[in-house]
Image 1: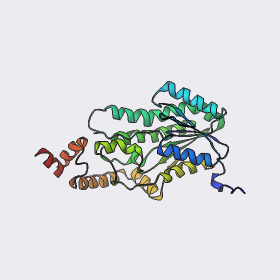
Image 2: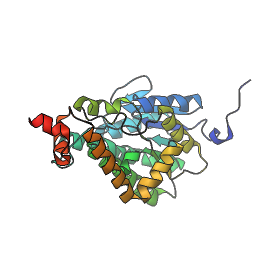
Image 3: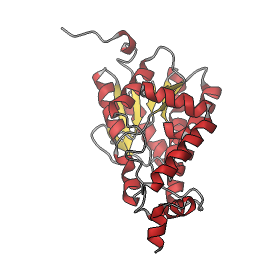
Image 4: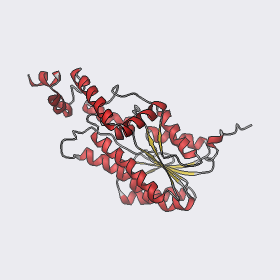
Length: 284
């Protein structure tokens, strides 16, 4: 005997969905949960896999072709688009934008925009839903994460604009995860500028279920955090930005004095401006 789904998930069975970043930690887990709940899912990702179409979302032509192929595989109807594809490079925000900064904007912001635009005709026909993944860092200015912060705040703004112009026919939700230990942080770890241990960690499951619940809701929620603590942080950072900046500045000074990012070349200017011991020892 099949156990009936909880009431808050009963909207999902039989729906058709596209998930971007579907070979990644969040995307693959979300696709698996959605399929378990009876959703037909086609993924797109630069790393093709069973059920995942090869697509570079920074390429307009590939996006149009891949989304069309995904919709065709889904029988011509699309009810749900979930965005996970993203990158998280470390940059010095006071320097000219480098390839990492361009990549953050191309993937996180414009990639989301491209895929949504390609899927929009199908979403309009089905009165479907878009779930965009931003980040709590969209409103939390942590050191060396400026490209990610700028791109994720822009993603949230894009979702707001999309809702304003298309919200009568397409539901739009923005999910704001906190820090989750996934491969997106590999590039910052490689530079010695990792945020590991500097901000409270969340579980992958928290984000996945926040997205699934948003997709299943009778009406698309506007902004959703992954945890109760994340909800409080989202409220604080959005409505009390001055207080947030003061707290971050105080914490940053303490961290640098304790040698945080001491081995990262990208952080040497940060140490110098704060007069931290790491700079003194490096210069001697």
